[in-house]
Image 1 (cartoon, one colour):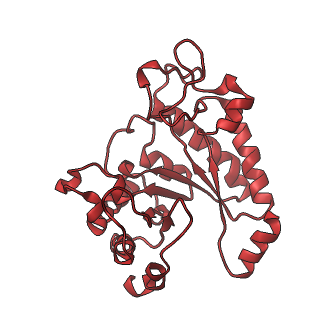
Image 2: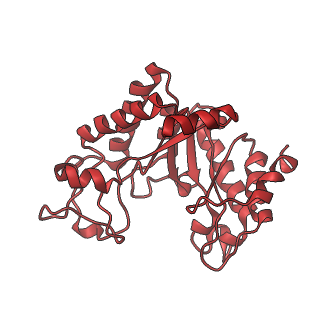
Length: 263
């Protein structure tokens, strides 16, 4: 009853975003294995978690994602959020082949996809957003997955780098445990993102980072640590953010106090 549910959310003044898993889609791979990333002998390649991927360069997959997006918008979602818009990275990368992207630079293949979404959805007045790795804010390469922050900022209404402090490697910014430094990590990441936004001649307020409201590894996240990330986002001059917890359980006290920490 998604229409009814979205209607209830709209009655409460809630902006409803529909997340679309793009190139990590085992369901479509099962139906259309000809569009999958393969190993070097032509079998469907799987990452370390056993998940199969679609080739970024497969144009029929783009059309499929547009159909999903159009349908999602028709039932009431206010925005389409494209996740897993990247090449795979976690698995046997020495035994991988991209049948549709072979010979093309990964960032160029993704930029072409970004432009396709832009020219498809914006004439329909449908807002679109992109989820990117957090390191796209501070790295100058494509991280081996094709993602470049500036390329996304040009084509999307909002770009959401996943700047979860627990996902940064040890010694990042000289911290033995970046997870224990939520303010510092997010502030640095989003300061760099603002610089890249200005270089791309786009509004920094397109930046809407994913922040961490979960515990992983040795660091347990407290309401104060969640709020520290929110404050860091505001202190970078930005005006919006999103929280992520895979279990969909959020820290109420962090949200209740968020307004008191903003500028």
